Amino acid sequence: MGFKVEVGLVHSGAEQNSGSYQLVIAGGGPAALSAAIYAARYGIEHVVLESWKPGGQAALTAEIENYPGFSSIAGSDLTNAMKKQAIEAGAVFRMETVESATEVNGKILVKTDSAEYMGDYLIIATGAAPATLGVPGESKYYGRGVSFCATCDAPFFRNKRAIVVGGGDSAVKEALHLTHVVSQLGLVHRRNKLRAEPYLAKKLVEHEKVTTYWNSHLTEVIGDEQGVTGVILDTPEGRKHIDTDGVFLYVGTVPATEPFASLVELDREKAVVTRNIVGTSNPRVFAAGDVTNNGFRQVVTAVSEGARASAAVFDLLENEE
Ligand code: NAP
Image 1 (cartoon, rainbow, N blue to C red):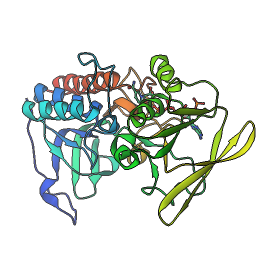
Image 2 (spheres, protein in one colour):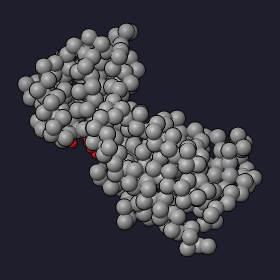
Image 3 (tube, helix red, strand yellow):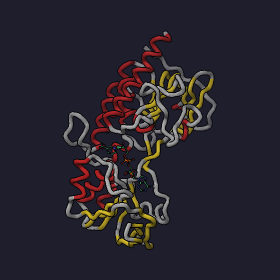
Image 4 (cartoon, protein in one colour):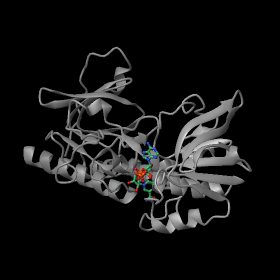
């Protein structure tokens, strides 16, 4: 099943990648990779637009301990294995960032930073990006002590002090990762209860290197020409200045839906509103993983949704024939 027609779309960039496909998959994380594996195995003519962060957020997770089959695996090892499997199945990847997606003559026109693709169907699996606090010093010291990725930046903080902000799975997992290298770790959370998996939360708060700041807000990042030197916290005891070399922010995520805003219904948090798990308000568009409002944001659910989305497209293509 499946055919591919190269069309001469008007575009001033690198047109050699442009073309028409039965399915365009936007994203490069577990949901997109699983959709790619299933699309390739179903024989659907497809292209995967994976942007510049292959593996998505999962690839930036130091250790994944709840993906069935692996009691512990580095996130990048898991997503690399998924991509290898997708390529072996025949999946076609392009390292391009989707900039817009619109409906044109009953098809989906996807424009990237360097090409244009026409898809009979689209799967949105672009995941979510880290949210920011918007406090003074946060953007100024980004890359100079402020980080959204402990897995990537932990080696820079060997025997130094760090602060982690947030109380979810990302904050706790990445804070635990940091305990292996830093000398002291402060955990700042706006409530007095972590929402992370209790097993890991307990391990973190009982760690000898960790000091907790409950019911506290980070209000400013302080630094000098070398980078971060401290933070200001608003705590129940009042304003506190804490010396630190690094600030790791895990205060939630923002779904990467901007290019799709006019194509499908989004909720207040800008997540794609789904119907029957992977359907959207547009019958030619499906969505999978952290970009959706499905709630439970895990690798295991992302891969399941990616598979379902490609299966749904396969059924529709079969019925069209
Ligand atoms: P999250 O679950 O949304 O947690 C965000 C944390 O940041 C919450 O503790 C929240 O506080 C806090 N927060 C939000 N806005 C804040 C603000 N303006 N100021 C201070 N604190 C703020 O995000 P996440 O930890 O990145 O996880 C995202 C999803 O991925 C979740 O579904 C998570 O389960 C999943 N995930 C799973 C794993 C895994 O291995 N199982 C690993 C990473 C992520 P409150 O608690 O008060 O709301």
